[in-house]
Image (cartoon, rainbow, N blue to C red; front, side):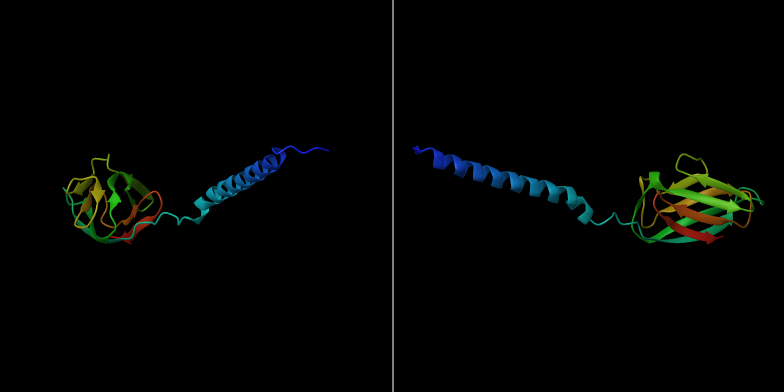
Length: 139
């Protein structure tokens, strides 16, 4: 059997191609599993103070939620749930009873949300986001 000078080079190229293939497979496996190593998104932490005030008539009341510290929350993510007796109502930014001062896109330090003209003088109030109950209390 006669060997030519090119046969030795072919086996070296095949070996390098196999090494590159193994490296690419390992990179793909690591990239697929890297998403599991990231921490989950953090839920907001907010300090809320709730206050009850008189409404537009004697038998109505307003509830005001004050942001006293912590993270900010997008206004579009906020839902205020008010329950009294067997009734429950959800208030979002598109409801005319939902008023946020100052008027901006986020609920942050110094902001307040007022739910106006509720037909009761005792209610359970929850401020929730899609992921977490931020505040729950009776007013």
